[in-house]
Image (cartoon, rainbow, N blue to C red; front, top):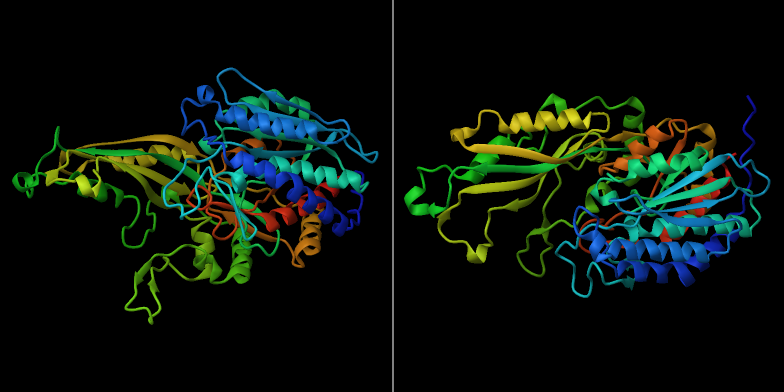
Amino acid sequence: MTARPAIPAIASAPLAARIEKQWDDDIVPQLVEYIRVPAKSPHFDPDWAANGHLEAVVRQAERWVKAQDVKGLAAEIVRIDGRSPVLFFDIPASGGLAAERTVLFYGHLDKQPEMTGWREGLGPWKPVMEDGRLYGRGGADDGYAVFAALSAVMALDAEGVARPRCVGLIETCEESGSYDLPAYLDALAPRMGDVQLVVALDSGAGNYDQLWVTTSLRGLVNGSLEVKILEEGVHSGDAGGVVPSSFRIARQVLDRIDDSRTGVVRPAAFNGEIPADRLEQAKQAAAILGDAMWKRFPWASSCCDDQATASIFAEPVTKDPVEIVLNRTWHAALAVTGADGLPPTQSAGNVQRPSTTLKLSLRLPPLVEASKAAATLKQLLEADPPYKARVTFSYDQAAQGWNAPPVAPWLGAALDAASQANFGRPAAYMGEGGTIPFMGMLGAKFPDAQMLVTGVLGPKSNAHGPNEFLHVPYAKKVTVATAMVVAAVR
């Protein structure tokens, strides 16, 4: 076997200068335009094809990519009937490197829905730059990825740094679970060659002080739990104490899943062993982040006696940083994310409601098989319903979690070098609590490839929620670090 050449020494300052200028002059204006488009993912916009918003953002990205001065660049929007489109680009290797080794860049252009609670002056489709933060839906998750990928490649070429062939796959269905992606992977994988490294710029960061590498992602089962006890609503004074509340029945069956006092998910089917290396990485991440692991969230004030007294805030499940890391990455968690059958408080009468429907989101440890967990969840919720109520659970999605392959020595060295050069600190490793189904798909399609999953979703960036922002200074440094890692592929 031929030994892998040493990682080239790269001067990060010239790369950083080029990338910063392109971000300021070109990429930020492109992202401002992108944020304005309500390009909601197909799951949230069933009429996406007719509405044309996904088409608008994928065409914007295509125009920009094609306009870049990159030798040999080819780009096209690829379409499969009935599926959301993808943007595919292909850039030949430079500096005399062999053409068959490939770096695959992944990103997506579809967005989560609006969400309420944006502070005054902000909104999901209203780009606002404030203190280096670009507010608006989708900039950080994950519209910046295609621009950052090309910027990294262009900076390397401008500095004469040899790099491998680079291809990009930018989809428009990720926020719906990437259900269109497998068909495109089957169609495009033969054109990608020997993928040595997958770079996915769609993840989180523990802080904005170093490069963060995502090592695992949780799985997900989401669906709707409906409890029906009456055919129509009745007077609560007449029925109270006779007709059981549909909401109380829902609470009872949910208590089969997680303890309402602690949040601990009980069934063994939703839990699993934590690998030793992930436990060690959790300890290292906790040592870096400390109390920032829980202070990063916008806790509600629970008490304030007067203006001279500091507010008392709601508290997390635990303040132990190691437990927090494990709770959000390797333990199951149940959340109720929506409800039907509950009228707004201002219009709620004294009526015993006939039914309650709750939208459930069950996050699963990375190694738990999602399809089996979904079937178990349905069985547990529906079995032996209290008061013989009609209890049904239908799940929309059973997305598998992901555990990264071991980091090759060359990649580990490249990540540390890139982080040190841009932040003065080594790279840090931590799992993420969210679910990104495409990572499992890419891992299955390219089983021998190394994976760099990173991103800009750091403290308070609030992806999917109100006041989402892209931390532009951090995004610039992540772009430079990405360029340096790409140059290490041989």
